[in-house]
Amino acid sequence: MSGPKYSNARIEEQRLRRLMKQIEENLEKERCKVLVSSIHSSQAELKRISASFSSLDCAEVLDMADKIIPDNSVSSMLRGQIKLAERLSAASVSANGNSAKLSQALREIENRVREFTNLMQVIKETKDGVIKECENGLNAMIYKQEDEQRRLSSIYASLNCDAIAEKAKELIPDNKEYSLFMEQIKRAWELSTYSAIHKGDTTVLMKSLADIESSVSEFAYLLSLIKETKVKVKHEGDKAFVDKKENNFKTREWTTESVVKSRVNARVQEIYQQLLEFLVARGAFEKTQSEIEKIVSNHQIDDQYKIELLSTRLSAAKVEANASAGFFERDSLRRECVILCSMLEKDAVNLPDSSDQLNAMLAKLQEELKQKTMAEYVADCMSEVMEDSGYNIVMQLN
Image 1 (cartoon, rainbow, N blue to C red):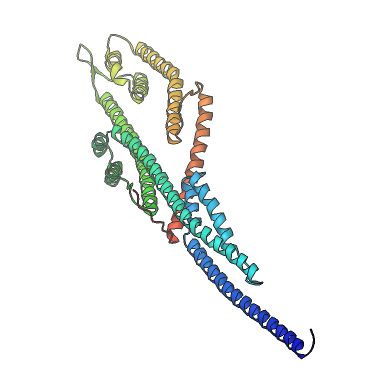
Image 2: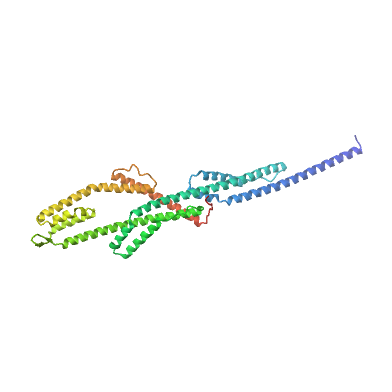
């Protein structure tokens, strides 16, 4: 086939081919334009979800959990979810290429948006679980402090402060010191009845824990002061008793049957005074008082024999005191070890028998208590810093 008709047909065919190609190119451009717009929208949604993720403040929650419930499984789960969210947040796709490549990129970004959206819900639930664990941990710490408060309250009750106060009023001459002592007793009673808060969010519970820790610490300090005053009152009472006996002894008239007055020999009086002070200090004078005074007042024996009798009693009392001193020392060391074990939540079993071993154990327990107290102090400081910085994690207890 040839001629003008064939040439015109070829020209028309070529023109139609060019038109079809142009139409396809235009369609491709439109498809790419729509795909790029969809990709940009999905990327914007991804950024919005990322911003919402950042606003959850998961890092602060985990920092709090590390202090209250370290090595917790829920916290570990949240950390894994956060890492995955960070990867999704940082993901990006290229918005260049033909429609096929753009379609693939759109599918990828839409899958990430769906995955990130689902993950956000899981993270919120896990975060709530961590907060709940923190609240439970804080409550457990508060209960522990309440146990210590009850132990101190038992000690306070055993001190019989009313009786101490009555004696102190008579024996402590300084009115200011007596008034201070009465204030200490009153404050100790108030602390023994202190009630901690167990309901509220983590901020409320952390405040409650700090308050009861402060209360228990002050209570323990006041008890130590009250014990010191009790010792002082006993010392003053013993001293007053000795002074009274000494004064009675010095002013007493020792009368013979012939009503001839004579003063006691100075050496007899000296040994009597030594024996008196020694027995009073050990709380054993009243048992032997009448026997000793019979020796001193017996006019039928001479002074030398009285000196020998009193000296023998003094020596025997000292031998008995030395024999029991070791027992009392070991008993005192054991009591201190038991108290420190209780404060460190350890079982006070298999305590050694010798004083040297008990002293070594006591030093070790004191060092452990020092380290524990230091760690609790650091934790308190960190809690205060968090609170002062304005961190407030709210979660109501069920």
